[in-house]
Each structure stands twice: as structure tokens, then as C-alpha cells.
Length: 286
Ligand SMILES: O=C(O)CCC(=O)C(=O)O
Ligand SMILES: [Fe+2]
Image (cartoon, rainbow, N blue to C red):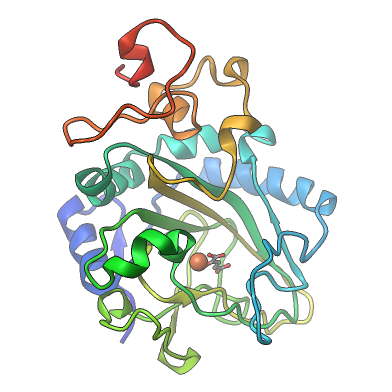
């Protein structure tokens, strides 16, 4: 069993079918080389400002590790490079996220835009499902829970098995028993070239791999979205001012919490309303 690799210019339906079938798909060349090179340079330059193991989020118990002692993580990537805003407007990832999330969720926003750098000698991350951030909603509905989050692990350098490629258990998004997160033996590595992304369901079991090298870093970034009626991991609305986002697209403004949640055409209320007068601005209509 391995993950399917599909070129980013393939039919959207082909990508969605692989994502639906396996819970994850590698989309090759989804982000342009220049964007990735710019983002990589900015992330490498910023990384020394962040302590390894700092972003533990209080997670990981019983010897299980969520953010390893030699893993560097940081967010607010638009602060270090505007290339991040371009990534939010990436048409292929936008089309995938729209297809997966809009039918269940109304509009969605950024959950993570985060550098995830796994250092030499790091052990594998505990296996988990990203949707468990919102366990009180997901748990009782499992296995019929809606998709509320979709993620992309994006390579900034070549990401190999040896360096700690994300490991996925294909098909685990359909397992009946939510408590079952399988074992490392059931996982396959999502090896990526720069600009490739592992796009995966919030329901699929996965985890960062062990970095088996003594001197090389796994350089990747995580860009994930969540239903606009759920609280994201990252507080993007506080991280960016209206001025910083003034020239950005309505999509980018909404993704970073500077426009309101819009349930239409689904049932639901307008949430996260802004202090603006025009109703179309409040609800994020272009
Ligand atoms: O670093 C990785 O490869 C995976 C990280 C991850 O899945 C997470 O933190 O939710
Ligand atoms: Fe994860």
C-alpha cells in the first residue's frame, strides 16, 4: 500500500478520488518553485529565533511525543514573507479545500500556516488524526463525522523517509473505531520534492516520521484549513492587522480571519462579524 502521486495539473476529480479513497494524496508540483524557494529562505532565516521543542501545545502523554524536543515550529509565516499569502491563494489547493470543506462547513479559514522542521535524531511523532483538535464535535459523530479540516504538508526541500517524511495509514480515515490509531508498521512515508504536497483528510491517521540522520533537517510547512465555525489552532486574526492585509484578496482576508464566516448557501448564521457597515463586507462577498 502506498499513497498515490498525482500531478497538480491533473483533473481535480482524480485528485479528489485519491484523497477520498486513501485519506491522503501526494500532489506533485502544486506550489511554484519560486514561491517555495522564497518561503524556504525566509523560514531558514527565521528558524534560529525559535527554540526546538518550544511549540509542545501541551500535547503528548505516556511517552508519546507530539512536538519532539528537536523539532522547530513557528507560525505567522506572512510576517516573514508575502509568499505565504500567495500560497493561500493557490488555485489547486483552494479547489481541493473548497470541494472537501464547503459542502459540510460553509466557509473555512486557516487552521495552521506553520513551519515544521524536524531535527536530526528526532523520534517519530505520535500517530493521530488532525480532526481530534475538535474532538467534542468529532468524537460522538465518528465514523460519520463530517470533514471539518483538510491539511497540506508542503516540502521546502526534498523530504525523504530518512529525513522524517510524514507517515500515513492509507484508509484509516474510514476505520470504524476512532480510538484505533494503528501502529507505525501500518504507515507509509509521503516522500516529497520541493513544491509537492501531501494533502490529507483530517480523519486519516498520520504523524511526522523519525529523522534518522545525524546532521540534516526535514524542512516542510503545514497549511491547513478548518470550518469557519470552529476555533483554529493558530490565532491568525490577531497576528495580522487590517493594514497588512489591505492589498490581499478577499479569500486571503477571510482565511486569516479579517472577513466573516459565511454559511451560504448552507444553513447557519453569519459569524465573526467585523466592525464594518456593508453587509457584503461582513459576509465576505467579493
Ligand atoms: O511533521 C509532520 O510530518 C506531521 C505533523 C503533524 O501531523 C501535526 O503536527 O499535526
Ligand atoms: Fe497531524
